[in-house]
Image 1 (cartoon, rainbow, N blue to C red):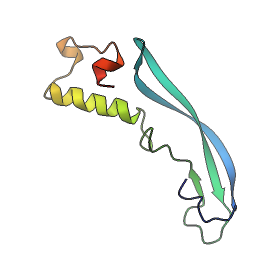
Image 2 (image 1 turned 90 degrees about the horizontal axis):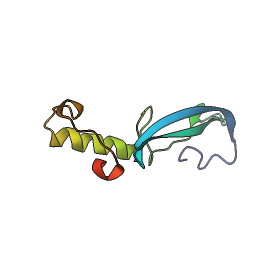
Image 3 (image 1 turned 90 degrees about the vertical axis):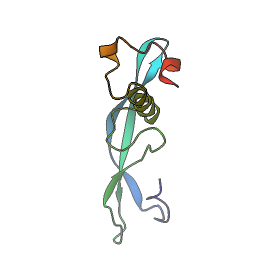
Image 4 (image 1 turned 60 degrees about the horizontal axis):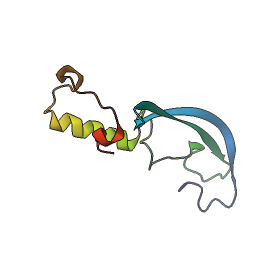
Amino acid sequence: MHHLRGRGGNVRVHDRYQRRLTDLPLAHQRFVIRLTVRRFICGSADCPRRTFAEPFSQLAAPYARFTTRLNRALERVGLALAGRGGPELGWRPSSASEWGG
């Protein structure tokens, strides 16, 4: 957490919340990741952000509902189909390998 560095331990957990991220299918089943995200409060007077949530930048973008790798797979499908919808063409992913994962 880049924001915690250099704060000298003046940061504490303020709250927690649940976040749900849809990921690539696993064994032909929908896969949803449930994260408990911690919100922190900074007690330093010169802190630019009073509260902040721990980032999961490798897993998903802020406010995203899909994981980064599912987003990439969906982009590849969209490009391969030239913008036409996959389900309308009869294509439905049944495994992670079909998504390119």
